[in-house]
Length: 422
Figure 1: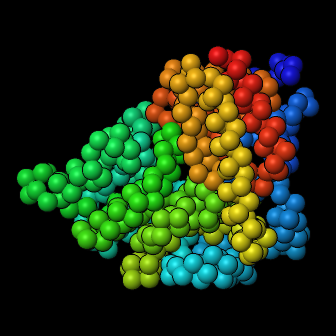
Figure 2: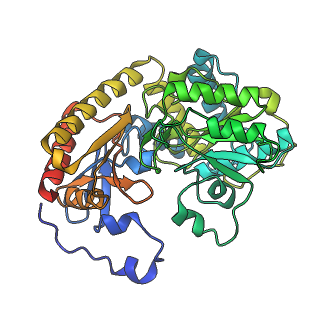
Figure 3: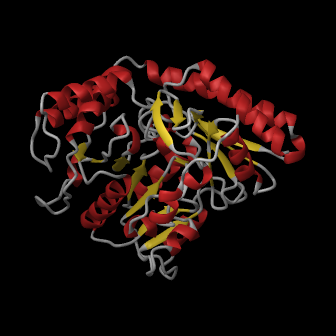
């Protein structure tokens, strides 16, 4: 595909140097539909990024768009803080009837603010309030957000350094496979908890991702998650599962922890919960933890009513019959087969691939290759990003609604990008 030089002058002169994604994809996007984005010069890009997991149902999903337009045209409430509205009621009822009750999950629902890090901050605050302790345990290569509390339980050194102040009251432990399975699970963690001289304050909670997205597509085994849940219960620590990127069906089931058969004390949800890419976040927790005083945690945009509308429509459309999970798992098998074929074609690159559902990563012995593959993929009309502490993993995050043909198209482009950079 021939790319004409886009006019990026206003972005380069006026917008902050902090911008990132636009550097890897140097064009000006104009519109998007389904699994495709189009720039102002008419070039087409197949999207294997999906708004960093915020667009599980694709761009401008027609069912969700219709619900949103109808709501706006009838002058439905847009901004309502935490006031009771018909849009919020419809969402809560759909969430309870379609998601929580069928899974026998007893959670209360909190709207902490519009983004994932708001949900994490409120989860950490609640855990500390309930347990009366400060320390939170997180895991190596974790990513939980960019505000200070979330950064304190994030592993990436570059992101942590941006805080500009000490990040305290967080202690990292080895994630699953971090020690190459040479050490029994949680041996170090248990030893620190038992030893009065270890220097580890009794934690209020443990926060974990079942699949570390930003950390490099590191997949925790169901057994490891079950053992972690058991450890938390035995040691009087709350278990927080950060399902912001891996929830809403990304790994197959609506919640990524369902496969392990665990019920976390607190769950954070954002990204694709609105279904349409509109800001919305939830903090879910067991009823006995609901010790908040009215207004003790709040935010001006914690009640995004247009997001409630599209969220309810997404639940009604995609989660009422159980088909979405089956489709996602089938699409995941399609991805796995393609990545296996790429690995078989290029043994000299020592590739490794891993994932669940429709989140996958491919890593090479040469850590710089992932960025080269992503850059070539863009030139070929495919949007993919990298992840991992050294951007060493090619990350695949297509919409759950992608068709088999579209998925095959993107995987063939990825294979070509690997071939042409090898």
